[in-house]
View 1: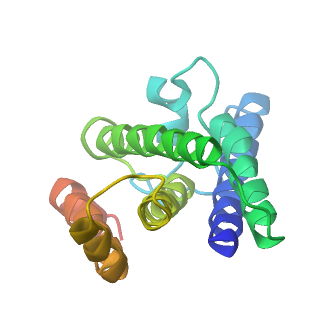
View 2: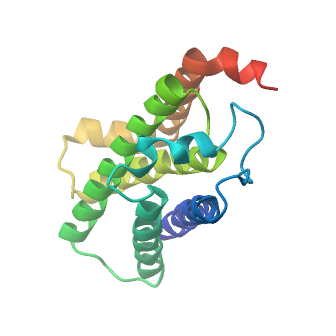
Length: 186
């Protein structure tokens, strides 16, 4: 679990940093084309320039710059053998659930309102699902998330299959929402 938190947190932090730097460079030079722009459909600029790109009054990547170091630090602490209290794991899970809810909102916005895909955003979208899912698996296995023995066994025994189903559902949603636009953009 520690290694997973370090890796996913590191990837999320790097993508957030990429977006934060792009947003800063757009402030400095509004005419600049973002490095994550492949074409009119695959671009970070559309997301960064929308009101959804700054939901709390500041650019969304700053949320990642604040949150992912917590994930990384938690992973390091676990890797060195520390046992974290239940309240900490529950708090981390609640934060991750809120982050995943934000991701679902931003995905829907990208698919149906902006109708553009942000490559750096998609990196964060991609790492959030296993970050959430494996915290749930850990919580169920440790007893921090109380469930019946049957559900605990089903989650533990099928955690990879459920992870894959989540990705298949996300890709299906993407393709149903913007698949034709995506194919036409290349």
